[in-house]
Image 1 (cartoon, rainbow, N blue to C red):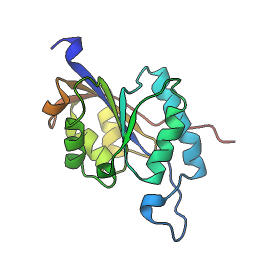
Image 2: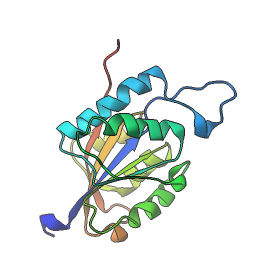
Image 3: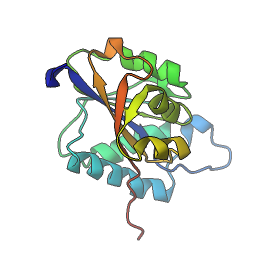
Image 4: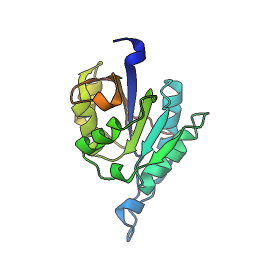
Length: 175
């Protein structure tokens, strides 16, 4: 396996959402904390040199807004596809979407929802650095970012094949 064969999967859970009365789950907005934390996630990704070549984002309002706020911190334009299949998806369904990623994409980002996002990270992580796997097992809170090193083609990705290298929860400063 050469460095050219390695890919990265970045899994971002949407930022903290609000629960307004009479608003469908799909249309829930970000809460004030979410509007602070999403840019912090984007800054962490930029500073960690972990910017995606392509982002796949759930169609839910809170995930789209998380993407908008996070990606505004990148300093570059990143293509995004809003995919309805990511809304409420299970880990297996998310893996099916990842396997469809174009071969030229080296770093792929998913922006979605729990429990599917956490379950996907745990399903793929055959190995982990430090406490990343333990922390992911305990909780994958809003704005959490997991970074997995993926050997080979997206289409070949399977259970236990990736290495979890990071699990962080960037938080924005309170006003």
